[in-house]
Image 1 (tube, one colour):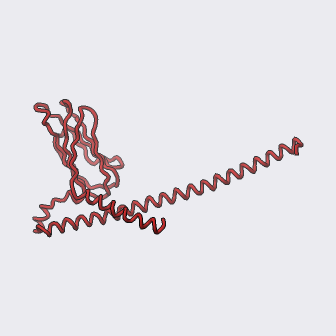
Image 2: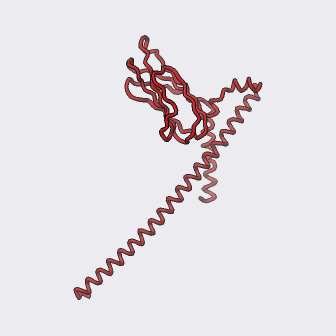
Image 3: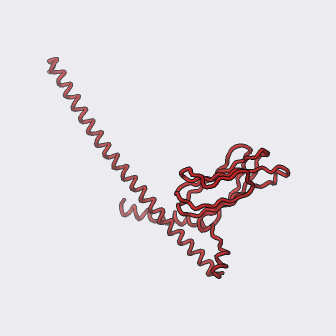
Length: 216
């Protein structure tokens, strides 16, 4: 990579880290309409060693008498199950990521009373958004400006970790790209060599054939 390309990549890394950190500052609440049959899933790309906390709750406005239940399954990028619960109406899952990639949370109705489907509220929190700042303020006896500074410090630390993670990912992708380019170059050289050898053998064979036929 040239110096110009490296300089152009750094702002992109900073922007990416800022966006990821800002996403971590707030919780991500979503509404899912669960059909009577089928599964609804949400995913989030998360770095390793990040705390994840999510609360989910079924809403029964359209079901005055029936109370369906839901099954929940959360899997890691490599397919490992980090949370699984059945016959739930409300619940929470919390874990610390050990793998980088997309974490998938799937919900489906598992009760006999399904009706026309229900709505589910999912409050998904990642990183510093999982921190209970009220408890931190009471424990450390800080408030106002000091509390806001503590939040900013946590945000800056998150941005720093994001930058390190993105730089590591960039280095991995650059290494893979260089290896791929090197393999393609060697394959091209090998293909050219094979073509030259095959052409020489064809020429030698034709020359012998014409000599036998006394054409040359």
